[in-house]
Image (cartoon, rainbow, N blue to C red; front, side, top):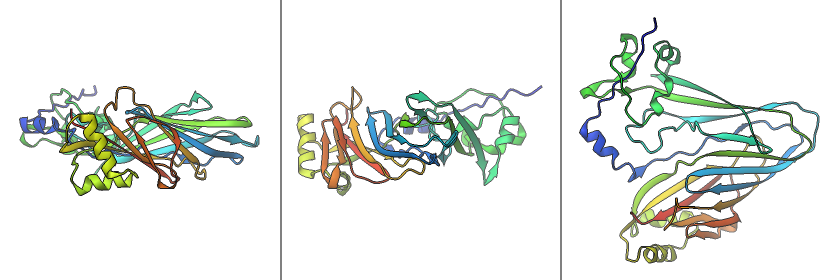
Length: 305
């Protein structure tokens, strides 16, 4: 009978204390771009990007002029990563929640996780032992009692702490049915994982971030101080990077809207518009054209709570 494996995480006080400051610095990660080859006759011309402080939606719009094709596949490959630690802000760096809608209808998703240790594929070994390769995506401790000898080398057990050592690679795949002639839309939806850090308003880093997003340094500083009701020493900066390329489509005309709800209240949102003009939201931005290119970057600044 297959042994039931449960893995015991005993987290030392120092690690727990470190995780409590996770909001100070978060590396963040961009979502994987959608890859594939669109059928001949499909042309995309516009992409509307919306962000509510958490969820990202990219709606690609275009037209299909051909009936001479069947179904096709689209795919994405998430960045390789290992265990992020207890209470990590972004445990699922493989974007398990990513969805694809075609003409308003959800497309069935197939995901495949692979585990690697020292360059070797250990996926089958883990599964035979009852251990999921996705264990590295869990941020909180899980209970367990023992590990079989043949997988102990895949975990660290130093100083009483036990955590996975393998790297996770993840592949997404969608099988898209044949498209009717006429207008066509593809929508990609996922949770954003912005880079997050604390920056001093007098630092070169702050000035660089503001200028990279086409903002005026003096104006942004004044807005932040005014919203806080005092002169600030530092603020929290979130930088969200969104890939805009879709399959083998040529560049489209991107538009951006930021609709904050309660997620970004009290923040200044910056992004480069056309001809490097500045789009500034407090925090919202109405649907507006933004610069061309394969990536869109926006910056959110807010006082510490």
